[in-house]
Image 1 (tube, rainbow, N blue to C red):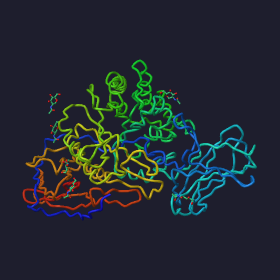
Image 2: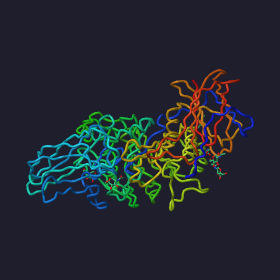
Image 3: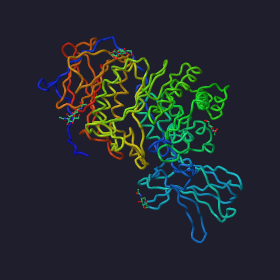
Image 4: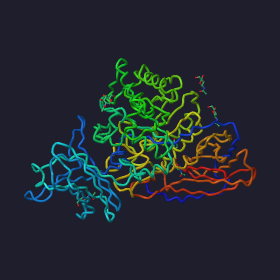
Length: 619
Ligand SMILES: *[C@@H]1O[C@H](CO)[C@@H](O)[C@H](O)[C@H]1NC(C)=O
Ligand SMILES: *[C@@H]1O[C@H](CO)[C@@H](O)[C@H](O)[C@H]1NC(C)=O
Ligand SMILES: *[C@@H]1O[C@H](CO)[C@@H](O)[C@H](O)[C@H]1NC(C)=O
Ligand SMILES: *[C@@H]1O[C@H](CO)[C@@H](O)[C@H](O)[C@H]1NC(C)=O
Ligand SMILES: *[C@@H]1O[C@H](CO)[C@@H](O)[C@H](O)[C@H]1NC(C)=O
Ligand SMILES: *[C@@H]1O[C@H](CO)[C@@H](O)[C@H](O)[C@H]1NC(C)=O
């Protein structure tokens, strides 16, 4: 990484000597109304984003689940044995690369099979000091030939000095019939967001909640597709009691438990007020196996069943199942996406020939209100169907795509379902065969994304919404960087990226309508969009400066705003183009808000530095 230039940000007075000055006039009407979704979240099981991340379970490999791809094993566990067969024996789990221990209530449970008259001891221990941080004895209810669940709580008195802690479960072998017991589904949860059982990690939910996302695209991504047809994401195997969720091999190198399933995704939407964009499996696996037209019906039916599970009344077969699992009230579902990136892996021919149509026709017929989205725009979109566009690229190419949507005059709505500047500028673009992606979003990439987002907002009548992808990464075990939010086992280390700060600024200044703007000056180095929030009647202007050799003076007038009116101008900058927000580090994005007054002829005058992102809102 380059040495920081330590450039203090100043909002400079308007100076005539500063090269290209932008004079921008915004009309009071003539724009388009925008969609409400705009900024959302895309999530799937990758980078231990859910298991070992957002899903708050602290025990890794809690039920020894495996598949032909990743056979069952004892990863994360070690056996505790005794000298000469005396005292308690058991097993220890190292968590998802550590366990956060602090004074709060941990809810645990485990299943035992085998006759046992003694007690169990559950404890949290520090690997650094060897000290026991919390311990509890649990009287056995265990019997022969039957799995019996035991529950307990642990409440440490103090915060551990680091996350190098383990969880242990012990029992007295001399009191167990045959000297051994079977143990399974050993689980431990810290407090969760909204105190939901089987819930989500608080610090990560806070980072998402603060961003205020409007939609969630789930459950993938490549993870929806599966490596093989049989290892696709099966909604019906992620619901109900945890003991009935078999788990599956993810497409990202590890087995998942199914603990974060369909219902947990919907509860996540409920908790953050996000609109679900449900992706259903479309007949294509990553190994390029494709379901033939003759065999596709069962998968179409499965997608309809899934939608019925979410939205059907309790008088329907799957609506009744949802009620049985604690959700009698149907959820609302307005968006369904068919597959993921069906333009890749030789999928496009079958997708355009029959796969998309089969799902689209069946879903639209039964649920006419649902907006169906194709997983690509590399095809002629039929009827009212929308499409999904993904962009991973170098910053320069994001900026060059600023006007991508201006010429898109198709009436089919577009979801920008995966967007991220991933690799440093190299004069060309991403080399997928030899990619060297950045570990975290970095400032120049985030500014380039801002330019692209401004291009999307200018066309927010055509664009349903945009999401960075992927969203979450456990720094101790990941397959893909950069991501929006990075973390490890210690919640105090969670990093909200430079891109998080850009999305945060843009999302919290939502335009209900765009407004036409005119200027003699072409876009670049300044890119901007203007509009109105009809709810507050505030005029909004968003801008970003990229590739400027000097600060850019701006003179901005709104047709309906007079001299003396005030506006808030928020400007984001960073120490240098390569600054990043790292796990365990502090936030390097500099956010500065000032109030400015409209001068002669109602012009707001200000100046923006190279590599800055700004929002102006009138009061
Ligand atoms: C955790 O503690 C163990 C035992 O002291 C030590 O071997 C290991 O290196 C520690 N790991 C970390 C990440 O500090
Ligand atoms: C889930 O549905 C699939 C069909 O998509 C079926 O093959 C499988 O057996 C079902 N699993 C369970 C647990 O019902
Ligand atoms: C930014 O400037 C560099 C160096 O002049 C140039 O190679 C690149 O194409 C520019 N990027 C954009 C998006 O204009
Ligand atoms: C808009 O679409 C129509 C029909 O496809 C096409 O003829 C026209 O050239 C397009 N206009 C632009 C500006 O792309
Ligand atoms: C409104 O939409 C039309 C059609 O897409 C487009 O030509 C026009 O530029 C848009 N106006 C604004 C202010 O975005
Ligand atoms: C402005 O930003 C570009 C990247 O867009 C960077 O290459 C250049 O060095 C910056 N120029 C100045 C004068 O800071």
